[in-house]
Length: 281
Image (cartoon, rainbow, N blue to C red):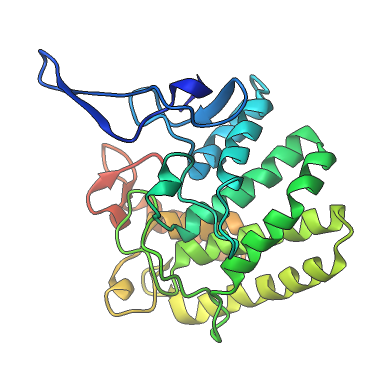
């Protein structure tokens, strides 16, 4: 994960030129944001602005380089492509042209607006994007059905397979984002939004406990379909603890112990991504 000149982003297509080592060159000549620098994923990857990558990067940046302007440029590069219905793109330019939808990455963008405000104290910026933030939250909460959980229809996420339905990862991130929204709404003196989001957030933990908790495995199931009942994901269970979806410290400990029991000599497996050992989740 790196900071790059905004004119040296990935083109998301190959240059098509095979070099002597048998690898294909990629074009890194695309302007992907305004300003002079932005945050992207790694130098040897696609060099695009990804909101989920920011969620990992920004706390480290805040206590080290404090390069929040690169974060802000990246956020703006995503917010500028917000759809009329409030949806945010999977990644920054040129990805909006591809039209891939990700419920979770949509939420990560909102999380990073909070993180920017948290460490910058830039209330003017928060006010300038507040209508966009609320529209994006409405897009996400419109997918909450009578269970109290969001029924996710988009398939895109990180490396994982099978995103969709009443998914534990998506709903735990939604809970986390709603609670951040309450805090931001209080800053904005937006009582109506704060009250609405607080009510929606309160309904998620009991619904997830009822539909998705597997007491025999001491883990949350991926979703409430037949196939989802067999998958106990790393990402969703980690987010259940981080978001406060768990009902007690004892349940958090059970989840931690159950995840630890699966560790291998090579790392912590993410079964939602088949046989991956991934640092992302």
